[in-house]
Image (cartoon, helix red, strand yellow):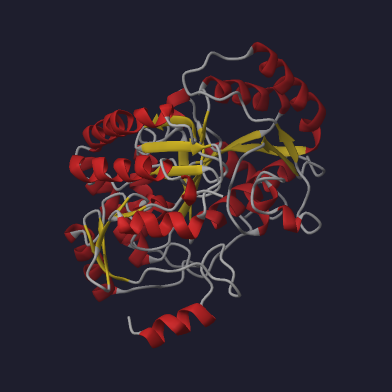
Length: 429
C-alpha cells in the first residue's frame, strides 16, 4: 500500500474497537496462504488468530477457491423469499447431519450476531405461541459475549462485555454468575443450588437461557465444566424455557468435538453458528432449532418466523460453506485438533511459572495465557509482528486460535512469541 492509502485508512476507515482520533497502527496485508499472512513490505506473519477464528483451513484454499469460482459463474445471489437453490439445500443437509441430533430446522442468516438475534426472536415467538406473552426476558451467565447488534449486546456481560456504554438503551435481562472455572472441575453443589434459585426467581418472565457452551470466548476465554450445561438444560425443562447454545466461536471442532455441546452430550433447542462456517471466505451464519420449536412458532399468531435478511441463504456463501464442511470432514480434523491441542499445552505450559502470568489453559485448538496486567495493545502488537507472528490480545488475555493447517513448527513459533512477550514488562500497562 502506498503512504497515501495508509493515510486515508488512518483518517477515514474505522477499524474494530478502535478510535479514529487516536487509531492504533495497522499492518497492510497483500496476500495470505496456508497459515501465513504476507504484508505489503514482504514480511510474512504466522496467523495465530485464524482471522478471528473463522479461517480454519487457512488461506487461499484450492477447494474453496474453486467453489467460489464455480458458484459465481452460476449466480452470486438471489433472494430467498419464494425462491430456493441447490447450495442452500446442500448446506442445510450437511448442517442437519453433523449438528447434535434433533436440530433439523435451519435458518440461514448473514452474520453470527444476526444468528443470535434470530435465536432470541425464535424463543420469544415460541413462548408467545404457547400463551407466554410476558416471557420476553432472557437468562444467561455473566462473562458471556454474543455479538454487537442490539439483541446479542443485551445478553453480553453488562459490566465487562464491552457494551456497558449502552446500558440505558439495551433491554435488561437476568444474569447469573458464571460457573466455577475449569473444564475438568467437579460440579460445585452450592453453585448448582444458587443456579436453581436463580431460575426459580427469574424463569417465569423468561423465554430462554442462552450461553456459550464450555468456553466463553470474547468475554474472557473462560473454560467451565460441561456438567453445568446438563444442569441448565434440566432447569430449562422444569421451568418451560428454551435452551440456546451460541457456538459461533466453538463450532466446527475448535474445542475438540465438532460442537461444544457434545462435551455435555446434550442437544439445545436452538443452536447458533457462524465464523468458521464458510472457512473464513464469506460472511454467513445459521440458526438451527428443533421441530418442536419450528412447529410451535408455526401455530402462533404470526404463523411464520418474523425475520428475513436480504442476503439470507446467499448462494455463493452457501456453496463455499458446504464445501468447507466437506473439506473439514475429509481432512482428518480430529488428528489436527489433537496435534494442535498437544502442541499448545507443551509449548505454553512453562508460561505458568512466569511472574507476569496468572494462568495458562488449553482446550482443543484454543490456547490462553492470562496475564496479571493488561497488555499495551500497540506495543505488544508491534512486538509480535517483529517476531513474525500475528496475535491480537485483549485485556489480560493473550490467546491462540490458529488455523487447523498450522504446522508444528509454526505453532511452536507462535507459542514462543507469547512467552517472549510475557517476559517483557514494558509491553504491559
